[in-house]
Image 1 (cartoon, rainbow, N blue to C red):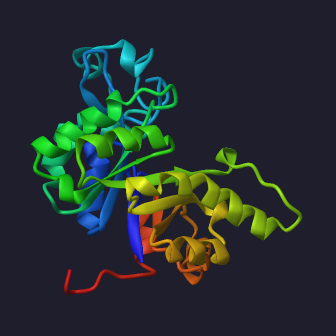
Image 2: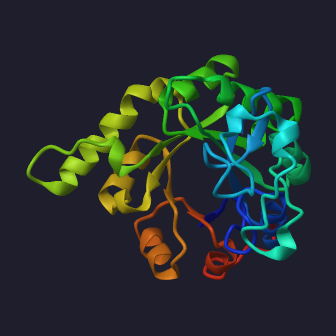
Length: 258
């Protein structure tokens, strides 16, 4: 089972910070997930929310402030006093930290309005870091992935799917779910997606089989409960996004060969 550290080891350290990513690397995770947005001056930074309020002691929107201002805010004090010195990292800093020790799942945020600039900026950082092979770009917005594919034919791409993206029709709930998910993803087969990342509530065994038959990797998000993780493993998902990688890695220890 592939364990994907969601925003790093975010159960043990503040999400999307270097501390969280260091902990994930220390655990030996295969893949780290992070979120990317652009500052006002166009720098890709690693933060989930559009606003700074929840995960820093700053205010306002990420794209309304230049990097120099954002760097003044603590990105860790909310989690614990010992993380007060953590700052919102740039994507470039995270690539330097990871340095090929794990794959990076870069989720492109802020593409809901049709803008592709965030994804393209993240792609440029991956290319400049020599880490394109170790990067997977994901988004709920297919157009953002399409822009990445246009600029890099060998980019690895994954489409995120959540219940709110789907319209279920038909009397049989299971068949309706399969049809809705495949209907969401199939129009984008030309992007040569590597994976479909499903909300855990969607990852039923028949759907996983259908997606595998269409040659897509299937990962489920976000799973912290070991019993739920084992149930999803029984449905043959390929990977699990989790805030608590240490807890799930205890179920599937890393082999000595890694």
